[in-house]
Amino acid sequence: MSSVKLCSVKLNDGFFMPMLGFGTSAPNKVAKSEVEEAVMKAIDVGYRHFDSAYLYLNEEEIGRAIQKKIADGSVKREDIFYTSKVWGTFLRPELVQTSLEISLRKLQLSYVDLYLIHIPIPLKPGEELFPKDEHGELIFDTVDLCATWEAMEKCKDSGLAKSIGVSNFNHKQLERILDKPSLKYKPVCNQVECQPYLNQSKLLEFCKSQDIVLTAYAALGSNSGKEWLSKNNPVLLEDPVLSAIAARHRRTPAQVALRYQLQRGVVALAKSFNEERIRENFQALDFQLTPEDMESLDSLNRNIRYFVDPLVNRWDGVLCGHPQLMPLSLCLPHRST
Ligand code: NAP
Image (cartoon, rainbow, N blue to C red):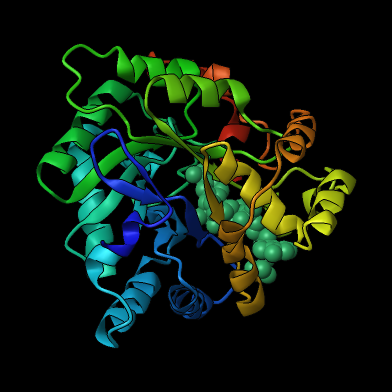
């Protein structure tokens, strides 16, 4: 059996996604060479699912790491589950495949396992990832995301992406895609911030009802001091309930935070470039929380977002082609994540 199938969830298109993924987004000040080393270590530890994006500007390094581990016989291409994402400046339908081809060239891969719409926010196409006008305001674009989705479907048909999905979509935005006339493929997943303080229980329920996997980013509370994260939030990994559960199981708070997601059927991403923590996080796969632990963790839900409140409901304006409804703050949290 391919190692992608181990501890994996079956997607609605028949492919398998490993439940624990390795996050690769780091603040710009972190040298890109660190991600290459980290991905190689992660492969050695056992991770097979890697999450990146055009926006992260690290696909060359990740590609090199994967190629090296294939060359030394550690893995085969089919053992790896690689996710990339199309950024907001490429959401016009004619640009979607171009963006994917750029990522694939950097990665030295012939396909990605999963391709996501990174944000439901079209931005002015061009070189700038955050195009701004003379007043420093972001310049949005008017794109019907249903047309973007059709371009995503073509990426799947061409074999450049095995599966396709979305990220940072709310319930209504997902419905717009699901209700699209002549929908060919449903999104296989929706990747959103999800951690015990923001457990996304309603969105999770909706996703499950539609056979869409919810993938959690910032599952550890994104404890990285990134400048665009909300300040003054409590540190998730210092939460007393999380810490007490961890102590009872002789585990760490990070392992409990990840295990919580896995046991509720959520795919969890964890970023670490530190060898010990890379290993520690992977061990979230090998223990079990009790139903009482799960209940206590559920009770931590309190609508705390580490990524600045994206006011997701207002994103509907974008789907309808009214980008002016979208506040500037929506894009900033995603600058290099
Ligand atoms: P995260 O995984 O919740 O947290 C990462 C931070 O936690 C890093 O600072 C890391 O530092 C630290 N950490 C890792 N393991 C730890 C442990 N065992 N104990 C204590 N601290 C630990 O946050 P994230 O990177 O924001 O999110 C994960 C991934 O999701 C990203 O890398 C990216 O791939 C994806 N993502 C996607 C979106 C989107 O819009 N779709 C947005 C954000 C993130 P060290 O490296 O020093 O260990």
